[in-house]
Image (tube, rainbow, N blue to C red; front, side, top):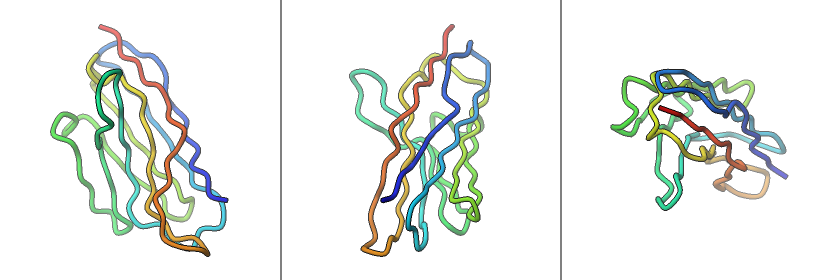
Length: 119
């Protein structure tokens, strides 16, 4: 059984920083892209940042220059460094992984971690 376990959320003031982590565990053959999504109350879930197995990154325009996604393949872990946080970054952040198990290629989601930015 594959699990994605997130950590690092919390509450900060505007301008502050947080670092999110997401570790995948279970019977994993390989991991393709990994990413972070977020969902604020009343809004749809949106892509924040993604990174391929080769390290190519993609960011939402709203976080470019402030957030950095990275991964350590040997640890099946993806990180999201969030700097210069704004109140509009407040949301539940979800980790996503496109990975191959012994059964098939599937997308998995973490349980979500709350990020709250106060003005």
